[in-house]
Length: 87
Image 1 (cartoon, rainbow, N blue to C red):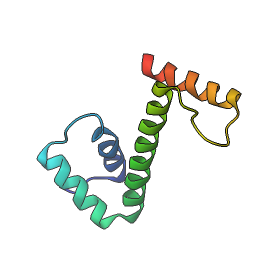
Image 2: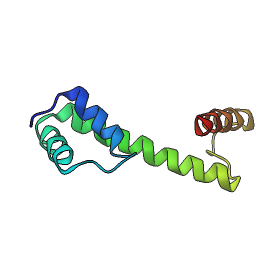
Image 3: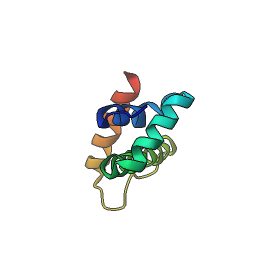
Image 4: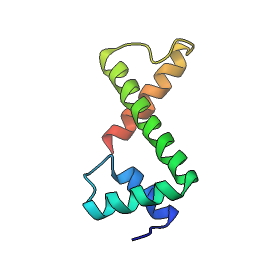
């Protein structure tokens, strides 16, 4: 039931794309309870996913991405994010 750090990272990613099985959830939670590095990674990954949602919403609404970004930088980010959506 104990999983590797590599598997924990995969489950952190997959948990945003699909519902994990009961065994996957349990194994993941046990791993995070014992591995501080993976726990930090999982939290950071969650933060990145949430920030991505916020940026995507701003792009869809035509809002500026961030207060300190130039228009050129904002456009580059928008183009890059759009290219990922098309894949």
